[in-house]
Length: 127
Image (cartoon, helix red, strand yellow):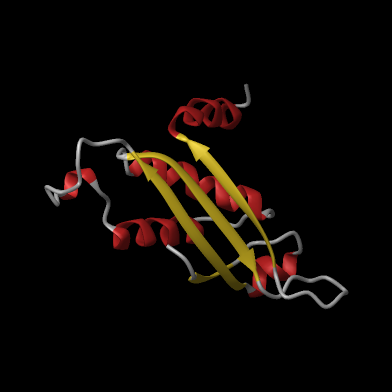
């Protein structure tokens, strides 16, 4: 999915977390291997609208200082909800960063595999 745009309250500066701004997301996933997709079975796929809805909900659920934390939180949430996903990459960017130079946008990409979920839990738990 490319070009998902939401409004959010994320950023290093208090003004960003108060006034908000537009954020752009690109999400790609690798699904578990199946024998064939010719059966056209939804159990071997994902609903793209559900992925978009989940990403938007997660992005709206809190305020993050860094794009990295926002992207990783979305990636973890998607892997937890959609068990068919083996890996996911979430690119997040903001178009008007508070930087004193002319710049179109800033962004990062966070990639996680299902096997990384245990490591993420350890980080959250402070281990």
